[in-house]
Image (cartoon, rainbow, N blue to C red; front, side, top):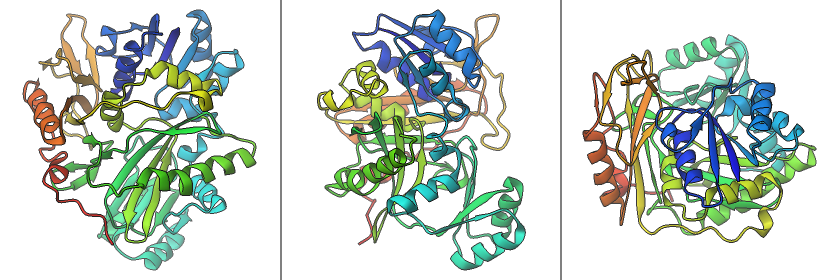
Length: 415
């Protein structure tokens, strides 16, 4: 099987490692890829959000499967353009990707499908914003209605900050705050059949103790030793299958990766958001534990044969990933600094580039991820931080508490 992987971040490096380990994959091409992905794939240049360009490249390399990593190409219709060439694509259509591309659309789908979620108002002016903030009270949850690379959400007790974020975004969804630990559940689907992956937890705030602004994610771990028994079955029954049924009813079936972001509240699981692709950095830990060949799984979803796919197999133990971020991230990350120590197994490249002189340099806010597995969560955590300590990047920072609360048994689901 020849596989074309679209994207060049940490999620795509994790996907590339999984795809390269599948015995069925004869050739892996990544576009545009990154220096880490270059170790396991042939890199090609492409404008990832240009549907015609990606489809042309898929035809040129005679791809048997195209895996689209980031959300922007999906919303732009890259999967549609690839499928129009007769090539299976893993990723939803542009219409179905609106589940991530518009928070308002996602809320409409959840309401129609009876999916448990936070009450919300869509606001486009200061008057409606003020009314919504009054209705829900603090903590205020204000979300950019469109794509924002994981950084469009503000959760704050400061009303001025909430109003400022709404003003900057223009069109926002303001929601009631959902209290309880958060869970990320990835579901592979062909539009009808659906297979859940292991639940994971990520860390959105930049600082230890969940302090500071939201980011694209500073670390993650899986599995969740504190998760209630039956959680995945409940979410599949109450969230995933009703959502997929509603998308089919509208004539826009969702096929690809449905990311369900959940809060486990005292009233039960509630959906925080849907995404239309693998999450970053949760992908790093979930795929590190997946023993089922990845390309075969994604091809089954892309070709409508997922119902016949065998049950998924998972490694024993746990996985932890810790993000190393550039100085100034998330507000104004500094790029171009030399990186030392990134050439070890387990180091995932998220924002790097190879300079003309061959040195590895930072090229984004989230630069690298130290990802490790272990027989239990504590061992995986220790191994991940050992990887991070071996990375040299001037001014970089990382959280020191990834998975700590889970290891120490300090996470509780509200009754």
